[in-house]
Image (cartoon, rainbow, N blue to C red; front, top):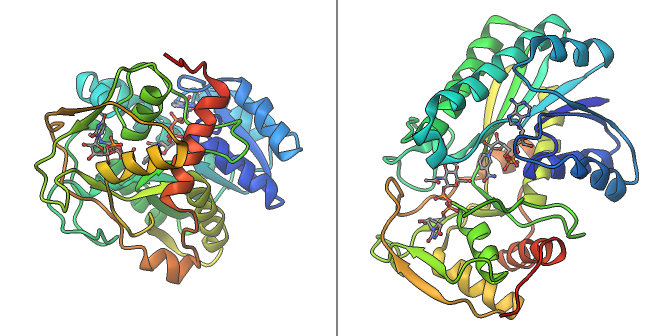
Length: 337
Ligand code: NAD
Ligand code: UD1
């Protein structure tokens, strides 16, 4: 079975690719490398010991997309391609809507034209907005606080409408909580670019000596230690959920939604102390103000994925902290000053 992964050179897509190859699937990758390196393709092939086709292609390019579908007998699509930086989406919303929505519409048109009826989509816990109580359940009302989040809500709606209109079409929407960690080989992981917005990349850059200290954004949240609580999930657990979702698609009609998280929240302080203990590093801490729009806590109700997909996480916060740092240490110069 040949699976097309859009955004397959990115952080999550590359881990999905390796997991699929290890499970006996063939893969093809489409990526325009706007947030990834071409080298990742070679490294994936090295890790999995298998080769595959990759296309340097923008999802919005109708002509190139036609070519990919014409040249390959694709059984299903895992759709990870998209822009994902929240502050960037607020500062410059149009490219976010053009890329994430425009790219998805073009992809769905190609799927329809070439009779490809199965899609797994990378959504986000950001769609639960500010007003839902934890743990988040799939049927809760959705809202967003930024254009990135709105693109996820809109694509979810597009998939529901599309699978309603096209009776053969099936979609699994996977709402990721906070993916961190990296492949145990340390050869692929989350690319560190500029000053990170998310906590784990920030921790890694501080540990690597690229930033003077770590920033704790708010200590007055309504949580046990006052810092924000999130449901961190190891990327290697997350990608296993995609294989389960792909298998499930054969038995679904329409669109189904699954949370992919651990079901447990960890605070900023807990993540920092775990990172320090596991990796034997002491980080300088700086207390900073809350980030606008941040919530107290976010964690998943994972009972639906457990019951219907037979999936649950296995890796610990310690594994996540060890593997994130292992990737940075192996691939990026670390200052010892
Ligand atoms: P990433 O940026 O590492 O990967 C996305 C990939 O898509 C990149 O390789 C990029 O070059 C490619 N891409 C973007 N626009 C494209 C286009 N128009 N045509 C072709 N390729 C394009 O991001 P990631 O962390 O791997 O995230 C994958 C998906 O999961 C995204 O849709 C993201 O919104 C979603 N998600 C990520 C997180 C997270 O914390 N990483 C959380 C929730 C949801
Ligand atoms: C962010 C995104 C969200 C996305 C999710 C998963 C924002 C506003 N939201 O959410 O859309 O779906 O990642 O990728 O960017 N923190 C610090 N110091 C830092 C950075 C973060 O203390 O330098 C805190 C935050 O306040 C939060 C926690 O760490 O409490 C986690 O932050 P982050 O990694 O950015 O994830 P989310 O806030 O869940």
